[in-house]
Picture 1 (tube, helix red, strand yellow):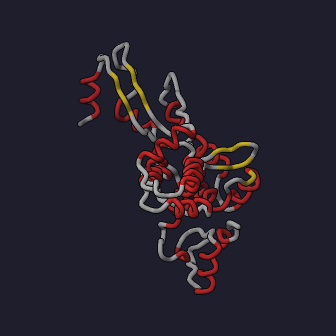
Picture 2: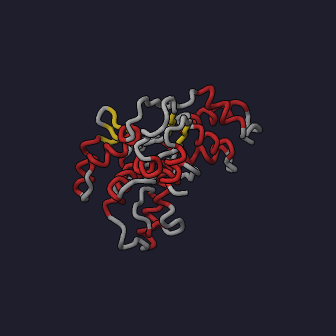
Picture 3: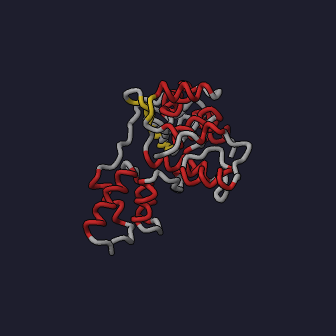
Length: 256
């Protein structure tokens, strides 16, 4: 359907319009123009994880959706789970750990509740900050990022979470990136937070970033662009399978 036809049909009509998961304000502009030709009383509701979309579309009222609280998160987690055979204390401990990992995000909770892996295994992956594929979150994490933003996002997910912002910026700038520009954009896109001069991200976003890197070469760590796991690094050097395309500095910052 041509956008001009759609605009002609909707012009001066009172509408309720819902635009879900908008990543780029240009998509809205291409689809609907300046959003100023509807009849008075029209309502447009838009969802996005990018605050810049609302600014550039000149949205009147922006409501930040808050995470689910612990009690609601537990209800959603328990609704689809098959882990109820666990002893009560273990079940409770693992439930709270998974809720903390999800940060009250319903999509992450639904994934955790329906995961075919045992919670004990998921718990160990979370504690080790292992890569985890979360459908939906995975596909959207790098959607709309330019090369600078994507590289900075993955570097922080793999090496620099909870580190001093100025130190991280110095390292990234030294590698040819525009760190502060990338920081601002990633914060606007809800992929990064900066507080008390520390760069940070939600744990499930970090796990997703590491999964993006792991999927570059699932079976051959030496072919990935970054390595952070000490076992993978040892195996790569012992077996001499490090790709020449790998950045050597990206091997130095590893989890304890």
